[in-house]
Image (cartoon, rainbow, N blue to C red; front, side, top):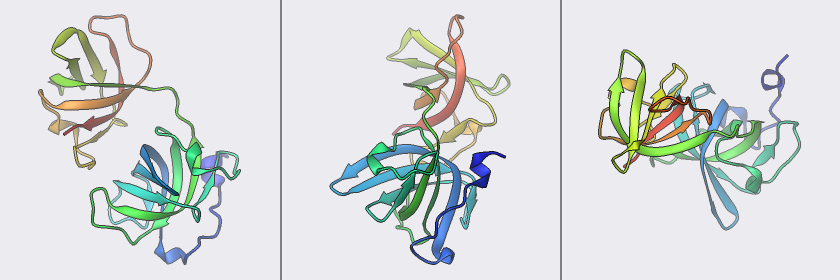
Length: 198
């Protein structure tokens, strides 16, 4: 049986009815301020959520339980962008975008797999072929074709998940993608996440 499905969350510091649980979430951003770490995660597998997929900024402090893949306790400074985690957090959230909530437990499911990130402007959107082409600084030599799969996560500038149909030429995007690229012109690879930038 897969470890992801057999892991049992430790008891919550507050009653279960106040906790939201998410599974296979991705750490999108980490910031730190004195004794508090803020971990922004994106998720689409959730128990107790109003929406099936969303973005939330977790407040991680000394009361937050953090475990690695083997269930060992680790510190907040060992969390990294790109990690896949299971988490439980308070259902009481701020009205900010993204909303902010107290984290009760974070468990690392998978470490970052060595993906790469590219930033550029979309120059072509092909809905039939399910791909987009980006370019940096209007330099044709920097063009890359990114294939979109059903698993590609696309988010607008506010962090909300959107459909591929809303991608259009001219948008500035940050794309996390596979490290491997074809030797074609332009090179091709698979996009894992596409974040529209302001």
